[in-house]
Length: 245
Image 1: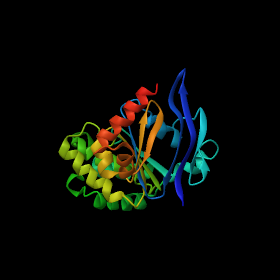
Image 2 (image 1 turned 45 degrees about the vertical axis):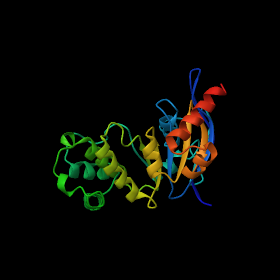
Image 3 (image 1 turned 135 degrees about the horizontal axis):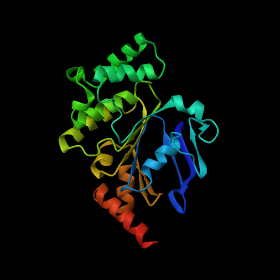
């Protein structure tokens, strides 16, 4: 089995608090892997550790066999991140943002425009091509942010709370965009929306207080907890964790 990511006893402490507490898991190539948990569960910190934005206190992560502790420069070209915050420059149009991002990564003007055209087609952004990013709706801003993260053709795409703050319709439209990427790129998604993890994930890790409390397919989590849906499964796992403190 080829793993895109292997997390090995990964930890991150801030003063006396452990934001990530000795977690381990494996993410297969081409999988959509969701880290599910409430705010403060350690999801975003875990992504920061994998992407080199923060250094582990303990443990390691292997990305296609390369260590984040010693080979981060080799790992960086394999990854890209669509953060919680809007990544687009508000004064630039959709087209200008895509071309600018490609140029920022060192592509020639011709290559940058070629990549931008493909992303416009893939994400059906033709109608908003000349719209400034700051005037886009929340859903379109998130769509643009994901497209910008794909401009380098990464092997692994991190989506950190991609639908945070969106209304129900915009969230469902973005789910369609994310589904279209499945199998083309390994996706690591963080979310606290149960229905989002339920609808999109190949595998799910339930995080509370910096630990992975359960991990598996949706069916495996439902079977293990005897719950009828992921929300009830999450509550059972979280309550069990609370009772064990």
